[in-house]
Length: 417
Image 1 (spheres, rainbow, N blue to C red):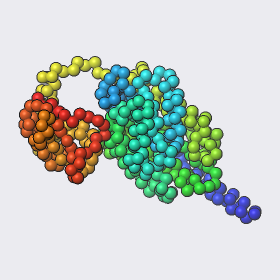
Image 2: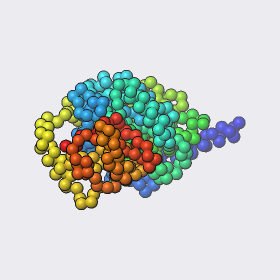
Image 3: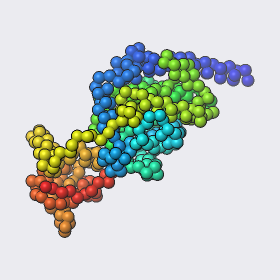
C-alpha cells in the first residue's frame, strides 16, 4: 500500500515538475519555448501589430447590421456565433441569456450558441455539425448570412500525443481547415476569435486524462498563435483569426498580468465550467469586445459601424464604374462578367467547391438551354456579349451534372442590361 501511495506521489511530482516548464504565451513574450518565440502575436508581442492590426481594422469596419439575406439593414443583426465543443456551449448558453445586458452593447448584436457537446475539430468537419449549427441559428430567428463574428473553442481529442511542436502544428492545420468551413457556411463572417483553453491541471485521475491532460491545453495556445500569424490568415474569403483574451494558466498560479484560474471555476472533472466559471468567461469575452480598440467599433453603440451615408450612385454611373473595374482585369484573367462586373469572388463564397464548375444558362420563358461553359471558374466569360439583354436563369453544376448547393439562398435569375 505504501508502495502504491509512493508511486502516485512520485507521478504527481513528475507531472508538476513538467508543468513548471510551461510558461503562458503572453508571459513568454520574446522568450522561447523549445526554440519558438512566445507572445500572442508575431515578434513576441501581445497586441496586434502591422498588417494584422490593419486587417483587424478593415474587417471590423465591414461589420454592420445585416438582414436575413446578408444585406445592410438598419434593423438587421450582427450575429456572434459560438462554434466548438462543450465548454464553448456552456459559455454561449450564458451569453444567450445575459450577453445582451452588457453595458453599451450595440442593440443589433445577438449571441447564438452553435456549439455542440463533444464536437472536437474532427466532428466539426462533418456536415452534421453544421446542420445543427443551422438549426441553432433558425431557432434564434437569424440566418447564416447574418453571422459576422465567431468565437471558436475546440481541440483535437483524437490526437493524444504530447509532442511539441508536432501536436500544436497538427492542430493549427485543423484550425485552418475550420476557418474555411466557417467561410463556406457563414459567407459574411469577418472575424473569428480564439482564447485557447483553460488549464486542466485540476483534473482527477481517470479516463479523461488521455484526451485533456496537460500539456495538451497548453499546446492549443501555440496552435492558435501560429494560426493567427500564418500568411494565409483571412485569405480565400475566410474570417480573420485573432485573440479574444488568452485563458491558459499554469494551474492556479497567477500570471504576470494578474489573471488567475482556480479549481472552483470548474466542476469536479476539471474540464467543464462551473456556474461561476461560465458567468466569468462570458463576462470576460464581453469586456474584451467592449474595450478592444478593433472590436468596440462594431460591438458597442458608441463605436458601432453604421450603413454608409454616401449616396448610392445612379444606375448609369454605377454601370460605368463596374465596367471600369472589369476592364482593369488582366488580359486573360478568369472572370464571369455580368453587366460589366466580375462575380467570381461572390460565387466562390456561395459555391465553396474545389471541383470544376459547369455554367448553364437558360431562357426564363421556355427554359431553353442557351449557353454552356465548362470549368467556368477557369475561363473568362462575358454574359453580356454572349447573351445580350434580357432575363436568364443560371445554374452551376458539378462533375456529376447535379446543381451545386450554395451556402445561402440567392435568386437564380439574372437581368442582363
